[in-house]
Image (cartoon, rainbow, N blue to C red; front, side, top):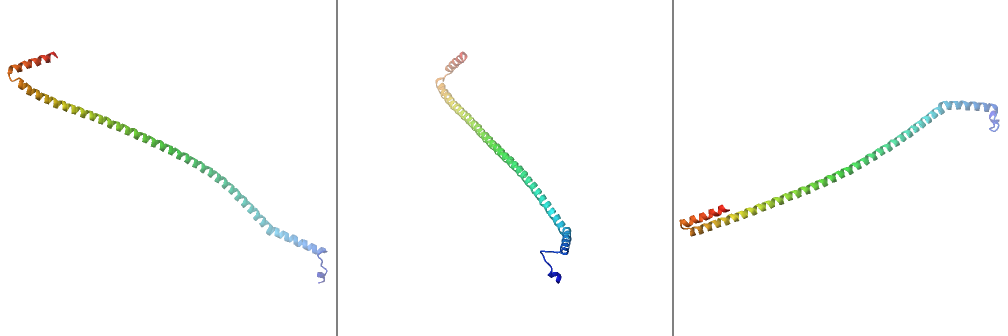
Length: 170
C-alpha cells in the first residue's frame, strides 16, 4: 500500500514508465497485427471496390451516352424514312388521282364520240328512211299517173324511147 501512496501521475518513476512503454509497444504490435492490418486491408478493398464501381459507372455512363446517340440516330433515320414514305404516298396518290381523271376524261370522250356517231347514224337512217318513204310515195304516185296517161301501147313506147334517149345523153 505504501507503493500506491507514493504514486504520482505528475512524477512517474522509471519502472512505471518502462512497463507502460513495454505494455504500449506490445499492445501496439498486437493491435497492428490483428486489428490494423485487417482494417487496412478492408479499407484498401473498400477503396478498390469503390474505384471499380466508379469505373463501371463511368463505363455505363459512356455506354448510355453512346446508346442515346445511337437511339437519336435511329430516331432521326426513322423520321426521315417516315417523311420519305409520306412523300412517296402523296406522289402515288397524286399519280392515281391524275390517272383516274385522265381515264375519266378519255371515257367521257369515248362516250361523247360514240353518242355523236350513234346520233349521226340514227340521223342518216332517219333521212334514208324518209327518202325511201318519199321515193316509194313518188313511185306510187308516178305509177298511178303513168297508168292514167299511158293507157295505150303507143304512148308507152314513145315515153320509153324518150327516157332511154335521156339516159344515153347523161
